[in-house]
Length: 77
Image (tube, rainbow, N blue to C red; front, side, top):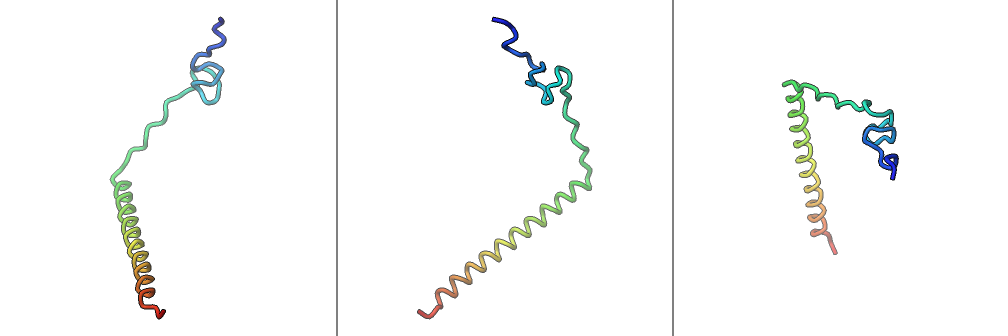
């Protein structure tokens, strides 16, 4: 058996590096951006608006379904 059958990590086979450029081409991911208070306030506002939109939309849909049942129960047969 030869050692050529089992490639090492980071070798030209591309196991460790996505580009296949060999060992040493891998770099750590960039640090996440610093979150400021303004960004958090914007996220909270967006979440609040989304919840209001979903709740209002659900109520409208329920009202339409209720209206269909009401009209159906009062239909002349």
